[in-house]
Amino acid sequence: MKTFKITAIFIAFFALLSACSETDVAKKAFIAPPFPHLNPAYADFQFKAEAGGTFTFDKSGTVITIPADIWVDSVGNKVSGDMKISYREFHDAYDIFLSGATMQYDSAGVAQTLETAGMFEILAFKDNKEVFIGKGQKLTVKMASYTADADHNFYYLDEKKENWAYSGYAKPEVNSSITAIKDSIEKLKPELTFPLEPEYFALDFGGMLDVYFKNDYQKVNKNKKSKEMQDKFKAYGIGWTNIWGGTRIKYHGLDYRCYEMLWKNVSDRSLPNKTTDYYVQDAKYVGDDVFVLTINHKGKTRTLKVEAVMPLRALFAQKAEDWQKNYDQIMASIRTEEERLKMQASVFRTFDVTGTGFHNWDRVYHREDKIDILADFKFDRDVEQLIGDMDIYYFVENNKTFVQINPNAEDKKIMLVPDSTAKFIAVMSDTEAAIFSAKEYNKLDLNKLKTDGKFTFNMKTFKISSKDQLVDLMN
Image 1 (tube, one colour):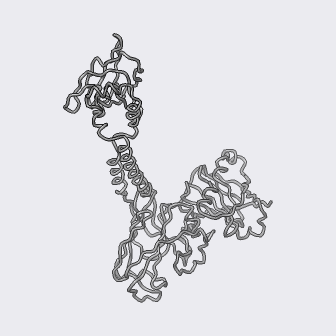
Image 2: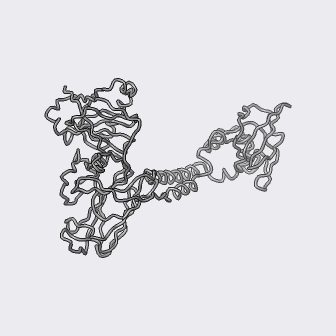
Image 3: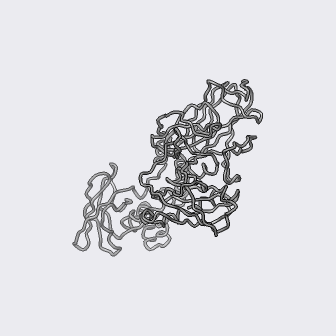
C-alpha cells in the first residue's frame, strides 16, 4: 500500500460538462469529465433561427426564451433556418463533478470555492456546427432552483480565461406552481380513508342491519348472527360496539337515531367493550358535528365525545369494493401530483444570457467552523504511477459544492468541516475511483482531529459503472 501526504487547494468544482449528447462539440481543454461514460446528457430543442421560441426543460420546469434572429456563425454571419439548442442543468455536486468543469473562482488573485444554487450549459448548432449569440443580442433562462436563499449571484464561465466571470444579480422568484399543486392534492384527498381507520365505528350491529335492510325486520332478525353481514361491514373497516343508540339527534338539519350514524371517537377515552346492556341515555350537541354521548350501563353512566361523520345509509349506498376501487384511483392521482410536487423547484432565477456555454448561480463557500489538519491518503492499491495526475475531491455542504485537492502542492494541510454529507473521492482512471465515504466520515471525531492535527484517510477502490452506484458508494 502507498500513502501520500496531500495538500488541499480548495477549489469549488461546480461543473457543467463539455462532452456532448449526440452533438459534434469539441472538448474544452480544461474541462475533463472524470468518468466520461457518466457525463450528463443534453436535451435538444429544435426551432427556426428567424422565429425563435420558448422551451421548457421537463426535468425541472426551467423556461428558455429565445428571440428571433439572434444567432451568428463563427465569423459573425447571420444564421437562419432550422437549428437547435442543446441544454442541460445541474443541481448538486454529483452531476457537476461528473461534468468535469472547474468551479474555482479567481477573484483579484484570490482563489475561492463556489457553492451552487443551480448551473446550466446552453449550446447552439446549425447543421451540426456551433453557432453563437450575436453581439448585442440575448436570450433568457428562467432557471428552476431548489435553493431559495437570495444571496447567489450569476456567473458565466469564460473558457478562454479559464475562470468564472461575475455577470450580475437577480432576486429569486417563488415558484407559484408549488401552491397550485398543493391545492390540487388537497382537493383530491378523500374525506375518509379506505378502509376506515380504527377510530371510526358504529354503535350497534343490529342498528347497522336496520339501516342496511331499510327496517325490513324479517331480514334484520334473520341476519343478527350472520357472519356474511359482519364481513360485509368489516369490508368498510367499520367496528362496532353493543351500545343501543335509539336516542335522536339532529345532523345537518335532519332527524336521525344515534345507531343510524357512522361515528368517530374524538375523545381520549376508549369505547366500551362489547358486553350487553349499554345504551345512549343522552346526546348533547357541542358544535362542528361533535356530540357528547352519555352512555348508561346498568345505572352507571360515562360520557364519550364523538363526531358524527355521516349517516350509515350514505356509506352503504356504495359497495365496499366500489369504494375501494374509487379510493385507489384517487390515491393514484394524489401520488402522481405528489411526484410532480417533488420535482418542483422552490424558486426560479431569471437572467439574460449573452453567450453560450456554462452559467451558474453561486455564492462563495465559507465556513467559520472549519479545522485544518495534515492529511494522509492511504490507498488499497499501488498509485505511485497515478499520483502526478490524480485528483482528489472533498464533497461538502449537502452536495452543493466540492473542493479539489492538489496532490503536488507544497502546503500539507486540508480543511475539514462538520458535515454529515462530507466524503472524499479520488479519480483513479476513467472507470475507477477510490472513496472515503460519508458513512466513514461520520465516524470522525473532529474535536480530537483538531487537537491531533493529522489523520490518515483509508481510500477504498471501486469500479464505477453508473451514477447511482457512485452515489451509493460515496454515501
